[in-house]
Image (cartoon, rainbow, N blue to C red):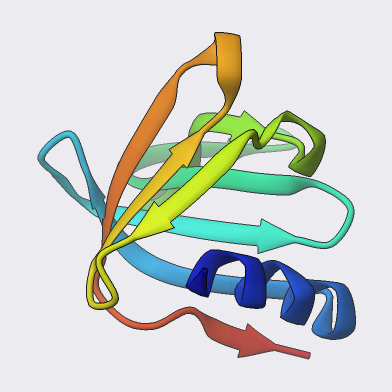
Length: 105
């Protein structure tokens, strides 16, 4: 129920994200984007190349998984932290979000 309200809000504000834990990884971020759907990323410390320019200690984003909104079959939550997203044949994802999804305009 809460997830459906969040999806309706994404349509209005275009982007929402939250810090999250997924499969024991604590440095994840769940992003809901109006056009791109659901994306879970993690920060990767180390060497980042940017057009031939190498930066040490920079933080890069690694995409762990991504699903468009159309793939979402069902969602559920415990009203506090746990979020279940069922993407049908592509599987189910269980996420522990640390903060309620922050709205970015």
